[in-house]
Image (cartoon, rainbow, N blue to C red; front, side, top):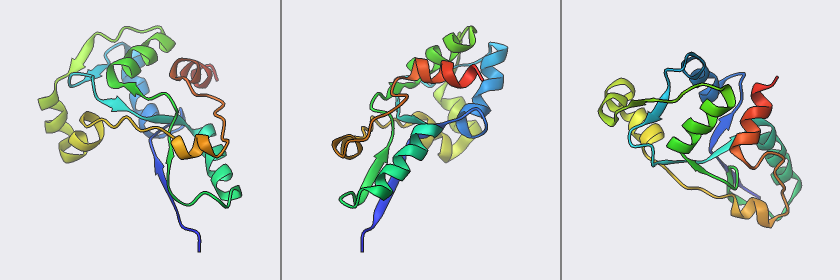
Length: 145
């Protein structure tokens, strides 16, 4: 029996999840990097995630762990600047590590401050192509709707 473990990065959508929660602060111009901003955030658009799931299900040779992330991870600082630019808003503020840990606890340490530079090697090797591999154009497309 084939077993697949889908390992998702941050799934970007304006309808929910992390991006939807970030948007109000970014739109008000009061957002900024978390901690030192050097932690990597591996991300994927919701549309590419759905396409990747279908691709994995249709390719019997894929089994085990599969990373569902863009081939171009970014640091939190890059993510912050790119999202600010897409919204035409400043990103001057920063949330110090101690504040992130105090407000978000263990989740903040593990998900917001601990980075992982994950690549979708097996997905790419199997012939999957991303419609939105780069963060800037992906955010601009999502936010234009």
